[in-house]
Image (cartoon, rainbow, N blue to C red; front, side):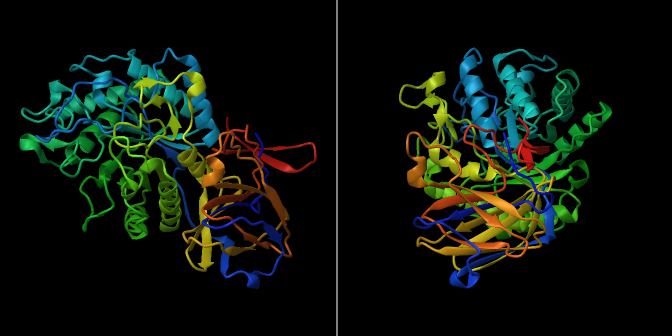
Length: 520
């Protein structure tokens, strides 16, 4: 894999537009365009603590139906299970891993439940099918240098549930036993399995709302602070410094005035978002977390206004893809440190078609064979315009937009590669003029583009469409972009067969141009 780097002046421009077909016009006067984007290479906003990726769960067992706090629900675990094929389908797993590497995901929420590893008190099972799936996912993250947000979604163990509370939703009856169990898992993963990719630990999914996974006696919400305190103490006792993250709320309604009494036990704040962009909500959380010296992570995201539940196709649609793009751009501008889409693997018949790749036949209710596992075109390729061309831990730069229905973000990777991302939410064709302030060396930008029609073609390939040259004297260009399109202008020169970018390393090619490749 290759990617071109020109010290700190390298440029990747990702432009997301809703418009008809057009092409590049290098050095064309900006006055001809009604939309202008100005990026300053010398002014920074913040440096991301993570990157961009998607949820990847390890749960696969189809367990007996269980009600939620007295309310019946067919799929009590939502769609956080069943998306991965059996481990003996080696070819299928290799294909899934290749599709993940192509995306270049570098921030992955890896999900499990306590039932998998501690089905009985102080009885641990490290070798069952689901635990082996967990190792396989973590192995991929380790090889590809992806930062892992390890999440215990819920406990789901009868031995530590409150009487009368569904074990799936119950907070631990004995907090010390809970902490020892989770710490034993983490210690095993770190010290025995030697994983270095785990960067954060979340003790429970969504401990808020009437479906919360942290209910006390009487099916009432209780504080997660005792759990965070106990787990932090147990990890410290074992010499494990990986930070905890909380509160993992299901919305961006906070943060609450006065802060949280668990602040001293965590190293990051995180929440979920299933509405529109909600830039103000993300900014409130990011500002709050940063004021505490901690990152803010968006650890589940989607847009349920596009549809969800059952086999609803909304999450696989282009409207949803554009909403996700807008959410990421708004989040970058608001100070969010990492983004996690729901979800990489997903059956698609449990809670909506959230899957980014197809691993399950919804009609036949069986796993697809290796040759039938394919990208879900719209969510896969639209999200790839972020994951494929961005490196983790990038710095967000100052950008200004003048125009209608246009938003932008600009990023610089740890090795100096720059990425400019622009979204046009309008329905009409528009031109755009991009101005780069502070470019100190000429750069050639490679253009990649998707439209809904293009990615729906059976043999779609994301290869370079054309290129534009920028010079120190004239670091600007204009372009006409097709309707409902996502376009990337980038110094990363990736053929369709290449893996996506996760982190930078550098080498020189035969033409003496400095190139940068992604970790594989």
